[in-house]
Image 1 (spheres, rainbow over the protein chains, first blue to last red):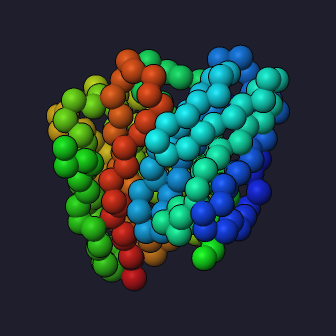
Image 2 (spheres, each protein chain N blue to C red):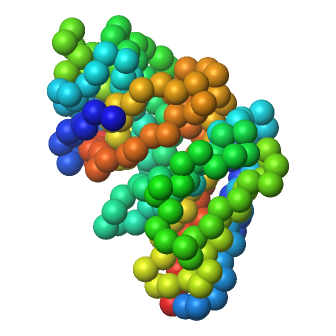
Image 3 (cartoon, rainbow over the protein chains, first blue to last red):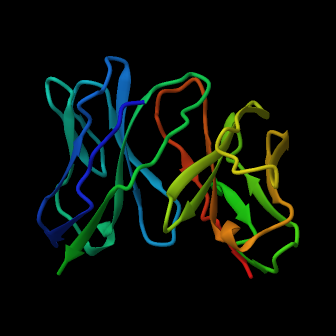
Length: 112
Length: 115
């Protein structure tokens, strides 16, 4: 699996967009980009994933650069409840189940 | 749906004792994962089952750790004998297979303290 690099921490003002970057310069053509987050004392929670195209769901948007070497997770209007550790993971999709390896992630602090 | 259910939520035990952690995956999910989380090492994958069969146990730390999945609705992670360095939060997750949602559903974890 390709290695990912994320800043260890970021701050964001409540109500503003939070843009979380992830570098995955060694990504291969069949590897997907997954984002998860972990709110304190809870299990990780899936946010979004994508291969090439930008993706959006009710939680966030995922912007993947054309060369696929980096991506950005966007929380359009961050709230205090979005304070969490955000993990970017790159992985080939396996029909028999996705074994995901979590790195250090980015600790996002949303401030009032 | 009740989600992934783990028990116990908290366990405090003494070194040398046997510990059994339990997990009930979401009904219909074919894959089950056990993770361990510590401050020092972060989230580590211990073992992964598909259709009740262990597929990859390369993350299991040593022979003191064992995991079973006797049926599609139940899995256990056993530590015998336990040691203080096993203190961690243990998460169980499940996912449906054959669908590229990329989504693992995690339980709330079992916090283990070994004295």
